[in-house]
Length: 133
Image 1: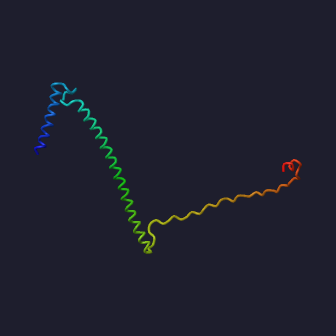
Image 2 (image 1 turned 120 degrees about the horizontal axis):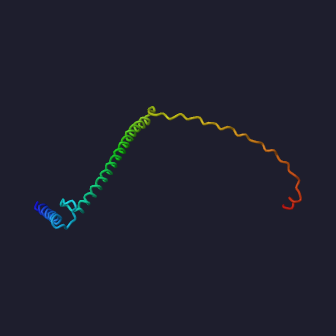
Image 3 (image 1 turned 135 degrees about the horizontal axis):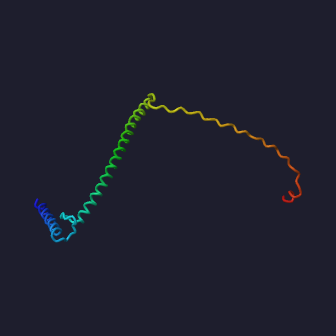
C-alpha cells in the first residue's frame, strides 16, 4: 500500500512540474494554453486514431469468424445426419436422402464417310529414275 502511495506522489509531482513549466516558464510549447504540452496532445490524438482503426479491424475479423463458425456448425449438423444414414445403410436399411441423378444418354456422333482411294497406275521407270537408284 505504501508503495502505491509513493508511486502516485512521484507521478503527481512530475505532472505538477510539467504544468508549472508549461504555464509559467513556457518551457514546452502550448498554443491553446490548456496546460498540456502540444507534443503530448498530438501523441494522444495519434494513439486515438490507431486505437479506432484497431477496434474496427478487430470488429470486422470477429464478424467474419462468427460467420465461418456458423458455416462450420451447419456443416457439422449435416455430417451428423449423414453418419446416421451410413450406420443405417450398414445395417441394411433403405437409402434415404437425395437419389443419384439418372445418367443421360450419350449423344451419338454422325458417322464419318470414308472415301475410297483409286489405285494409281504405275508408270514405267525412266532413265533418270534408274540413275538415282
